[in-house]
Each structure stands twice: as C-alpha cells, then as structure tokens.
Image (cartoon, rainbow over all chains, first blue to last red):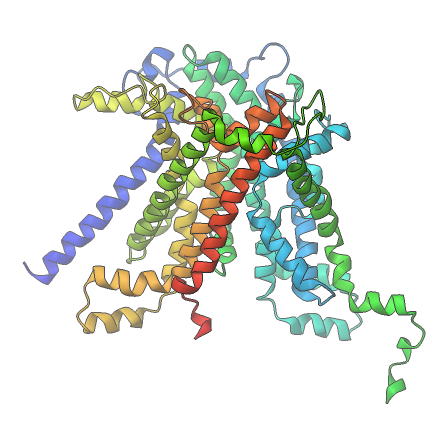
Length: 285
Length: 305
C-alpha cells in the first residue's frame, strides 16, 4: 500500500470519527426540535427527524397558563429579571477586583491573592446551608427581587471571572497606565478610560459565560424562589415536566426548546467570543 | 532633593498609607464579599456540622455524632461511593474524549469551525433543565435510544429505572459536555511548534509515539488544569440527578450534593447536611492537594526551563 493510499485512509478515518461524534452531539438537539412539531403519538414511534403530520399544538399548549399562576412569558421575564442584574454586577465587580489585584501593590497582597485563588476550589455545596440561613434571616428567601440569587455578585464573589480578568489584564502593557498617570489621570480614570476598553473582549466573554450559567442555574431558584408567580424558566420547565411527562411530550419539549432559545441565539451570535474567552482564561493554569 | 516632591509634605500618615495601598480600595468589595458570602458561611457550616442544627428547632446538642452517623448510615456511605464512581467514570472519559477529538481537529481539517461549534453547543446548554428533559425523553423505556436499539434487534433496558444503568445515563450527560475541555486542548495543541513534529518525523517516530512523547508532555499544563476543574465540578453535580432521576432508582444516582440538599432542605437537618458537605469537601480538598503537589512530577511548564 502506497503512502498516498495510507494517507487517504487516515483522512477518511478522521472525518468519519468527527462526523460520528458530531452526530451524537447534535442529533439529540435536532430530534428535540423536530419532536416539538410532531403529534404526541408520533414522537416516540421512530427516531427520524421527518415529521408526518406537522402541528403547532405543542407550542400552543406551551403558551397556555399553568395552573393560572404563571405562563411561559412570565417565567421568561422572571428569569431575566435576575440574570441581567447578575451579569452586570459580576462584570463590573470582577473588573474592579481584577484591577486591584492586577495593577497594585499593597500590604497582604500575596495572602489575599492566594485566598482568592483557593476559593476557586471551594465547593458551593459546603456554603449552601449557612448561606440559606443568612438569606433567610435577611428576609431574602422568596424575595420579590431575587436578592438571594444575584446580590452577592456585587461583591466579586464569582472568583472564576476575577481570575480570568487578571490573566487578561497581564497582557495589557503597564506603560499605558504609567503614561496616563504622568498626564494626571487618577487611578479610577485609568481603569475606565484605558484598562476597560482594552479589556473589552474579556469583559464580553465574562458576561456571555455568566449569562449562560445564570440561565442554566437551577439550584439557586430551587432554594430561593417559592411563590409560583415568581418562578423562572428553570423551575417552570421542571414543574411542567413533572406534570405533563407521559401524555404531552410535544408541549414539554416545546417549552424546553423555548427556554433555551435565547441562549442558543446568543451562542450563535457570539461563538467566537466564547471560544476565545475559554482558551485565554484557562491556558495559564 | 528631598523636598523636590512638595505635595508629599502636607499629607497625613493615614493618607500616605492609603496612597501606597490604593489597591486595597479596589479589592475592598471582594474582601467584603469574601468575608460575608464565603468565609462566614464556610466557618458556620463547620460549626453546624458539630451540632444537631435543625431549621425549625435550632441546636440542642453538640458533638461529633453527625460524623459517626455518616459512616454508620448506609444511605450516606452509598452516596459517597456513587459520587466516587461518578467522578471515576466521567473525569477520565471526558478528558480522553476532549483530547482525542481536539487531536483530530488539529490536523488541517476542513470546516474545523463548524465541527468545533457542534461539539461545543452541548457544553453551553448541558446544565440546563431543558437538556435534562431531553435526556428523559431519549432514555425513557420507549425513548429514542431504545427505538434505535430495536432496529438492530436489541431490546433496550429501562435505562432510568434500572439501578444498574441509571448512573451511566447521568454520567453520559456529563461526558456529552466535553466541548469546553476540548476547546482548551485545541488551543494548547495549536501552541505546540510544528518543527518539533518535523524533527520527530525525520527521526522516524510514528504518529502514536509522537502523540505520547511529544504532544502529551507539551500540553500537560492544560491537562492539569482540566483535571482539577473537572474533579471539582464532578463532585458538585446536582441538576442531572435531581431532575432526571431524583436520585433513584434505589439511591443509585444520589450524588453527595443531592443528598446534602435532601438532608438540609427536605428534612431540615442542617447539622447533618453540613457534616456530609464537609466530608465531601475534605475528600475534594485532598484530591486537589494531591493534584497540586504531584504536578511537579508530571506537569511541564515551558517557561521554567
């Protein structure tokens, strides 16, 4: 067998593996999309994406009120009423903390920095019970403004992003800060006039990741939201799954698909930022 | 020369100190956040773990009884064992898959961005309730997977109600999300200089030899990073088992974080829940420390040369 034939087999093998794995990754999602347009008795009759009797019944049912208390639009609004503050607070507070760590020397910096890094490895499970007691004593459990879910992000508690921004900040030359300082710029002005614009790709990537993770968050709402009218999408989908699974799959799947649609749109609009963000943040280890 | 910086003269010592430690002002929010939302709960949960703290009845007893009970309660030791099993299955498989696919994508593949996107989408959405619902649809008795198996004449098991299989389905959900680790590997592989491979090819090293004696050693920092983050995340998995199987059947998918949730927020036994969480935390911390101390032996940082 010649070198050329061998190469061809190797190439064929590579594409074969890539397509096969890609199919496993994507086919369930495509199947989900097609199932939302199928009739309930058709959904599990085969694995094909082809729809024999296309229907919008699943979507119509998905838009119905649920127990009179909450519908999908309300749940969507509820979700974004804490996701948006969470994203904004995380980005601003993390950038400020990263600036402090990345650009200044102060007493105890080494100790504080190692504490910051070690909280990266602190499992949330350990903190859940006392945090719940704390929020409960503040009256934030089932708060109308979801304070227990997002308020802590005002204080740069999402260490992963602080760490990531410090890594990015290292690549911005310090000369720029110093030049601005000589020109009479205060340190805060340096942050928002010089550092932030240069850091913009990193800030966008932090915002995108926090957006995705906050939308996916299930345990937060599970612990801190009790009133059905305040349910976000994650609880709403779980609720209707428990109620409808078994007889109305197209409704449940349509609901699920609608719930991740905003995330899918954001992902496809900004996929390069995701990939760049994750690559640049992690590699330094 | 001493007086050439006149503005210094008028400043009080306190002001001077602040100017020298201005950075503290910027990390002050973080310090407050750390103390209130991390350090205080962290200490408090250690304290609770030595009490019989109950959400409604408060504390009436102090001691190490929770820790004794943990190792004498089959339900809890089983959850620890299941969590260990979950980590041992998902972490190596996820990393192996991520590295394998990244390795293939690193050969001048056409449509590399399309493939990368396809592999990455599950990582973004995998933690959501919607995907847990989808998993339920795929692996139910008449679900898509069993329909597929029936085409080749196999009668699929009851994936989600058979204790022998349910954990694997939960594991599969995590392995399916290998994309984020893959993106990191791909970036690292692109950083391996091409002339190293050329030299090895001239020396007659085969593809497999090159992979294990050049590629893997060069990207050990990323392997290390992925390993540590994946272990930490695997120990905390909650959504999958809670939504898809609710810990069942017969506790076969009750991971520790789910058990902590059940003790704390269903039975209101905050003390016991804290003790279980601390046992998990200590196991996790020991593993992380082992990883960090062992990295001197196998992780190769190029700037150390």
